Length: 202
Image (cartoon, rainbow, N blue to C red; front, top):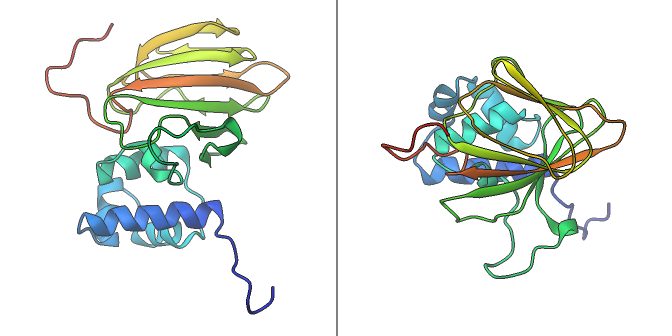
């Protein structure tokens, strides 16, 4: 690279920059954020510097600790009212080739919509995986999934949907031979606490 050229920041560096910006805007030190997320200060520093990957569960805990939506950790989207092309969606890679794309840009506070692509055999969640207690809708737009929710399991194909609470343990597996895709709708956004006296589980 010549002296006059500027290097394009990586996805990890952009994520780290946004974490650092939100942390400082809230008057939190790295130690404060580490304590709030149950991580070590050195790991938070590595995330902010772009030298460490952050698993999806870590991103959730960061968003919770910073009182922001998960989508706020994505790249800054275009201005309100601007068309967001599929190829331009900000995205986060969170392990095993599973990638989540932002559809609703901040600062929406009542709903969060994302699209997630799962490679063949891709898994998110597990027997003990929960996050908050909000209403989520999982909609299959490509491929076939096995969705385990608590003690129940559902095979979902294109056009199928599942409505559930994020407080119920869940695991999503792409059981097909091709990349599968699903739309997630969370209300309120999954990284924000539900409002007091929220409705009971559907």
